[in-house]
Image (cartoon, rainbow, N blue to C red; front, side, top):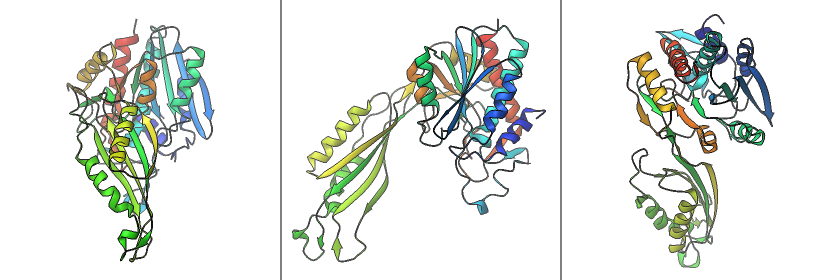
Length: 376
């Protein structure tokens, strides 16, 4: 692994579909230990994590990320083996190239170069790496943070290597994420013959007006940092399999992506109000993936903006779009959190790729951030 590109290829070559790490963290830890980091491996359930530190005291700057990847999908839709990194036309192909193994390689190599040049840097440089970001995310970053909080350890600044960029590296930096709340709803009715609907209660019929209202209701207009809250149904099932029988139950799953205008309890109350208004007989369970978070002010955002500008010439847009990330666990503990990483156009798709030139550019961005915040 002579170059950061070689390092990224070695990580991509390891099949680390959630929750497997498949040795990725051992490779990263070895490089960090070689320049004086102390590395603590923390395994919870089937999930591998590590917490690494160099230096002492505050402020604590942390690089965070994940070695796990989503499944590759249909192999026939890949032009190459998803776990055999291939370079073609200036791009590195492989599952995890963009999300986020190239960024992990760039972070580690940037940190290695920084502490080699600044062994007595200010504060603490840390890494929090998990193999459970793409999965349930319960035994990864969330579990490590619980352990750190028990010890009284805290993170002041955190840069997550998620693929934040849209068209070219550095054009977008994420300074927050929307909250994600899912509802699992069962509407109970009474099965019957289609010719005698008055003797049955068809849950499809009773739920339809409520569903129409849920889609028609605009919850907010967003704010300076967040787009309007969205509501989407992702699953809807009912029926008996027979054309002359009305069903006795309907199941649906829906999701809200919401801003700091709402708290998840308020959304739950709002939905219950609509369902009750339509006099539905229902059972509703909720799953909260994470509350919205936002970094405003502080030292981290200006340092990241300046680093991106110096490395790429771009003035990055500050955004909160996209799905969830482990920032939803790190920010509530009081850390300033920013996400900056590769272009996200092909993440989770077949033939996932990253520009080869962007790997060293990411390393440059991460190194410049360290220089601005931790150099003496």
